[in-house]
Amino acid sequence: DTGVSQNPRHKITKRGQNVTFRCDPISEHNRLYWYRQTLGQGPEFLTYFQNEAQLEKSRLLSDRFSAERPKGSFSTLEIQRTEQGDSAMYLCASSFQLAEATDTQYFGPGTRLTVL
Amino acid sequence: AQSVTQLGSHVSVSEGALVLLRCNYSSSVPPYLFWYVQYPNQGLQLLLKYTSAATLVKGINGFEAEFKKSETSFHLTKPSAHMSDAAEYFCAVYRSTLGRLYFGRGTQLTVWP
Image (cartoon, rainbow over all chains, first blue to last red; front, side):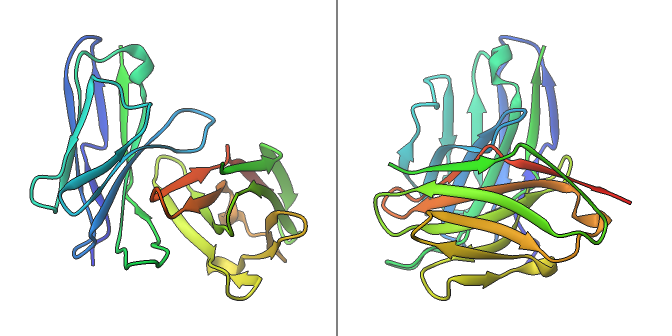
């Protein structure tokens, strides 16, 4: 078990560019989450997948954001036409959810995005 | 609605002193509560979780937390601080129907030698 991995760890881009982040969850975990963390704040939920299905999206996830988990394994988060306000740490977490049980989410190291 | 309040954005203690990080929650249903720790430029590491079993929960690195329903609190403690405990600590409540964690704003712990 190698834990949750995220790539890249750091991304610097110019305003208006598109960026894509990748998350590889812990093997066999059926749930995958994306959170965003800005300086001085706790992580805020963006979206999550159960296998390949995207079950919920936060209002924070504007139309410029899209996430996929094509085969129920890794996931990508794309931000189109980046804005300076998108600068943040993007965290991925995964868990194994059994019916009616409380899953524990394990976090990756995050991707720090800086939009110039 | 779920929310988490962490009292004190910064806590400083001397090495060997008691660590107390405060967390109060609001939840419309019995909560599932978590404490995570974050070291600089890293993701979050689970310290401990409460899932309605024992009210006193023991975690990693000597930390523990006590669930007090009457006070809607889930404070994190450690009897003796170590320099390596310096980090940011987040309390979170889990809402199972939506599958999401709601985090507090975090408490930065500084440990002085």
